[in-house]
Length: 432
Ligand SMILES: *Cc1c(COP(=O)(O)O)cnc(C)c1O
Image (cartoon, rainbow, N blue to C red):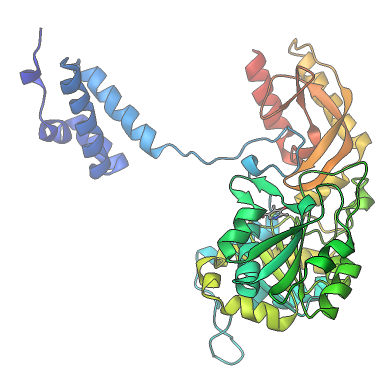
C-alpha cells in the first residue's frame, strides 16, 4: 500500500498536464489552493488517494469556490414582495439603466450645466418631488438607513413620542426601540398596544421633546377594539407645540393599492399632504424599484439629514440611483406604470386561472395528479398585512412554492410572463 511519502508535491501536480490545463481555465492561484487542500486532506486522513480521486477533489474544491451562488429563481409562492427572494423584480428599463451606468463613468456628482460639483441625490430629487409633492428628497441605502438617519439627524439627545401600538419589528434586527436607541433619541412610549389617542401624545410632550414619530404597521395588523391618532391631528398637535411629525412609512406606495382590491396601503403623497414634516420609506417594496431608502419632506429637514456624518455611511450607489431614476420615470410617464410588482398586483383573476389551467394540462400530460383551486396570494415584504389577492393555485411539486393545508401550491401571480416554460420544464423534470 502506498504511504504518505508517495504523495506528489504541490509543484509536481501544478506542472503536470492536468494542473497546467486547470490553471489555464481557473487561474494558477486557485488551482494551487485547491491542490494544497486536497493534499492536506490526504495527509490529515493519513491515507493517500489514487491520482484520479485526488484530481477529482481538486476540481470539486475549485467548483465549490467558483460556483455562482446568487441566481434567478422562479417565485411560485405568490408572495409578491419576498425579502428572501430579493423583493421587487426591477422593470427592464431600470435594470438596463443600472447596467449602462455601471460599466461607464457618469456625472454622479458633477453638475453638467455648471461644471461644478453636484449632489447624487439631485439626480432623482425633482422626479420624487413631482410625484409626491415633497419639497426635497434624499436617497440612502435602504429603508432602515433612512429611518435611522431621519431620527439621528433630528432627534439625537431628545425625546421622541411613539405609540405602543407601533413599536414594530420588521424582521432581522430592525426593531423600532433598538433603532431609536441607536439614533441617540429617548423613546417615550404612549398609549397601549391597541389604543393610542391624540391626548396620549399631547400629555407626553415636555421641553425635551423633539418629535412625534408615526410608524406604519407594515407587517401586522391590530384589529378589534382599536384606536390610533390620525396623521392630520398629529401634525396639528406637533406644529402647535413646535415639534416635528416624522413618519416611518415602510413600503412607500405611490399608487393607490385599493384600486387593485388589496386594501389600502398609505401613499407617500397622502402622508405629506396630511402634514408630515419628514418621512422615510423603502425603494424595493411597493415602489417596485431597487433596494433604497428614501427621505422626503421639508427642504431644511432633508438638508440637515444629508449634512449628518451618518449620511455618508449609508450612501446610495450609482447603480441604485440609475435604477431608481428609471423606475420613477415610469411613474412620471405612464398612468399604470409597467412595473413587475404592479403588474402582479393588478393581474386579473381570470387570466391567472387560465395560466394555472395551462400548467395543469401540461403536467397532467406527463402523468401528474394536479388540480387548479381558488386561493389567495399575499403581498408580503411589509406591505398590506392581512390582505390577500384572489388567485388560482396549482398543487404541485416545488420550484419555490408555498405550502397550503399540507399541499404544495404554485401561484401564477408571481411567476413572470416568460417563466411559464422554464417552470413547466422544471416540474416535468421533478415528476419524471
Ligand atoms: C420595511 C420597513 C423598514 C425597513 O426598510 P428596508 O428597506 O427593509 O430597510 C422600516 N420600517 C418599516 C415600517 C418597514 O415596513
